[in-house]
Image 1 (cartoon, rainbow, N blue to C red):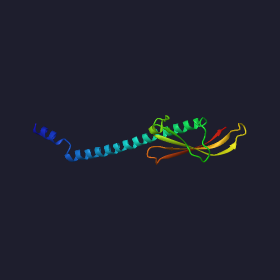
Image 2: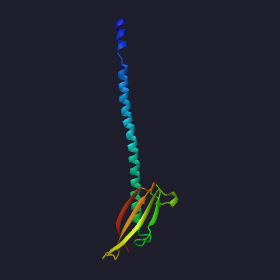
Image 3: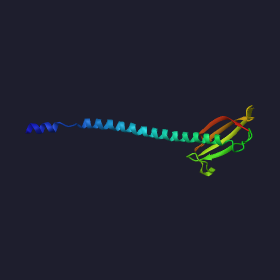
Image 4: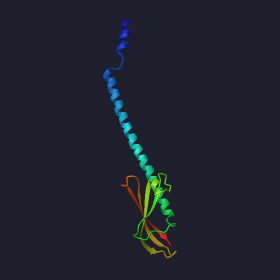
Length: 139
């Protein structure tokens, strides 16, 4: 019986092995937690990119309704929230400035002129601006 007791007392993990295992687990956990912040930042950026593309499409599809500013004059400004809905300036997250470049050629089929429309989109911080340009036929 004495031999059986000695075997069970010596069959365990040493303090060095436990410390090494805890060090490896801590290293892996720190790496995984670091990936969470990268994933959250990427998700936030992709949501912002989606809203910006919706805003650009909405402005360009609605462009036929308002009168365009004369080429070289002040821009038309539109304001949107984080969901892409039009809001007053005080509640806005995104600001869209619409500029009209000089009119181009007249289209022979419709008599419409091609206008170069430039959109500048900015959001909190004001340092980030996205530019979008498109040729649009207007009467």
